[in-house]
Length: 377
Figure 1 (cartoon, rainbow, N blue to C red):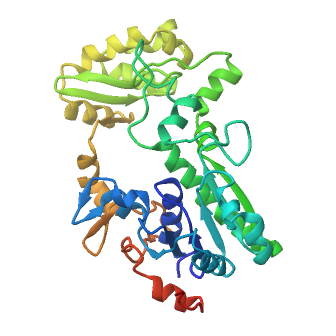
Figure 2 (figure 1 turned 120 degrees about the horizontal axis):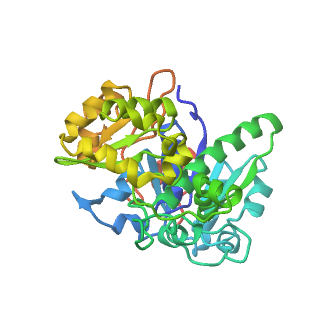
Figure 3 (figure 1 turned 30 degrees about the vertical axis):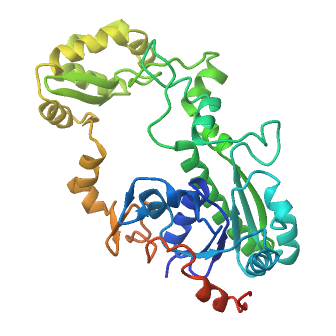
């Protein structure tokens, strides 16, 4: 049996943070009833599209049932409230205050269902000066401090290649929901969860926190190298780049021996991680005098042979097609649909939702029957 078998979730969310959270819950066995407006989740209409279906919608809505309701219609709103009275969890990512105005806010729904875990996901949270600001992932990356510390040395701020604020908010939401369910088992009472993309992303910037709060410094853009540790970054090879990650003095001594510069291990300039970072250009030159004469494959092999963390830089196709990714089951098929489910193994098994993303409104009759509700006119 999957860990969340028997848990029912009413998913009022759309686009990414909320659907990602509920997809993770679906993988673990929760029953997800996805409520969509007549036009469907916005992500149904965003490319790339394959076989008439949005890839982004497909990837983030596996294992769910779709029910189309117009929440401005009193009969449809009554159906939504009736379902909410019977589920364990409600997830919504409307702008703060919108769910309450619709009659689907935490106070109303928990008055009828005190055991309900009600999770709100928003850009900046349910209170605070920024609560009403519209927020996409890019906005949150810009305001959190992440962009300011990301980019090439001397270059402009850069966002990450993925919608990391959305995904982190979804991950924290799923984590908080499961914690609240554990708490409910002990107390009999549900909970109201306030998950903000801004809070989630800011909380993960631990290197920036260390620099700002403890060292009194602002993080500087340093490209692919680590802002605190050296050598910890990308180094030129004869056909590309190799990633080398060295942290301890023992590792640095092994690296110095490997690259033919054993004296570097005793050099006072390189006596600690902090000292090595202060002399990063000299260390980079030492390493590249060795690595630039080797192919990336040969450099990685030599470094691995010395017990040093190293890697080539792969694109997503190389990562997905690797023997290791296949062995770990990182990509699965639901029917003919490739999906990337939650990554954790439970007793050696990797749970995955049992069905692909639903057709718009395709489960209405089954959902109403399961909740003992009658079809509206």
